Image (tube, rainbow, N blue to C red; front, side):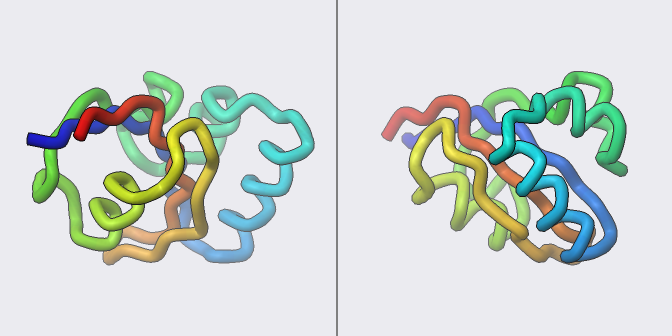
Length: 93
């Protein structure tokens, strides 16, 4: 069974999500931005969600986590919670 580890930043607007992604692409630290801006409790761990399997997260999240390249920031990804930047840190198929 597939497993993945990922981290994310959850914000309320697509514009803020895109701005944070630009900052990361320009060298900003993902974990530091997660601690400052994310509305998810995972922000205390720099956005780290730990390890999970398919179906444990909302479908839009799962789709990206189990198909995107590892260690590459993805997003904005819209879910019912808001807009996410996602980074798959590890995956086993």
